[in-house]
Length: 298
Image 1 (spheres, rainbow, N blue to C red):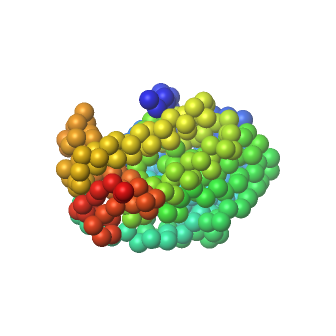
Image 2: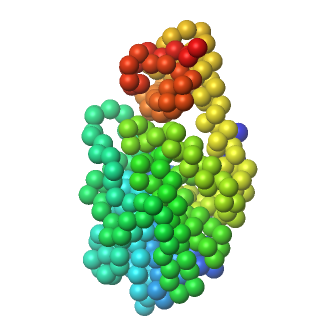
Image 3: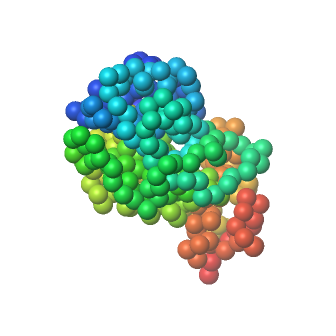
């Protein structure tokens, strides 16, 4: 079982000092993909970085500016291009003159009219400085390292605060829920590799964009990985009975889940299927897709 962390105390629009170098302002955009809302982090004092300014909500912009009154925002750091993370970057830059850092969109995802499994895409996001391959930025008393973590999206980045051995995880690891991996922009193979990349760093604290921090880091990531491996084992067990399609497997695999959530679950299973086909453990009748027939290899 994943030891979820869901208890968080905050007031919308207020700034909280959550560690010696970190302040947090939570946007008033709660929902099924954002939990209580987007947690925008402010790093340092005097000359500061802002991580994931969030959705384009005027009240949240003003709350961030009030929190840094008398200071200078020099860096705007974006973990990825979902609409609950990056749209406020441009308005914040216009008001502060700060530079936007992140990784540009690499895959264009069309709205197919199907089930929504994340908040949506900010396709206009363009950083001033690319950190797709890693890198460091710094200010007075703080250093942020960019760690590419594709999986949730193709351009996802986590940011390590070296002075506190802490990691801002965006949506890569969330304390309140598992992370959605939705092809084609989401990629399960990349995601599992990225989890391993973070695990070996042995951070003391994870700061997700949504929800409270994770303090017991290694056991939490181990449980995250085990959850994914258990799901793929269930898929392979289901296929051991014979070839099948995702739409027929989901009601069995997710029998204890509200049927209204089954379409979203099917997208997650597709992510696993693509990964299993790539690894040669499952075969598909053609390119793996939502309507393909799958069978065990060998």
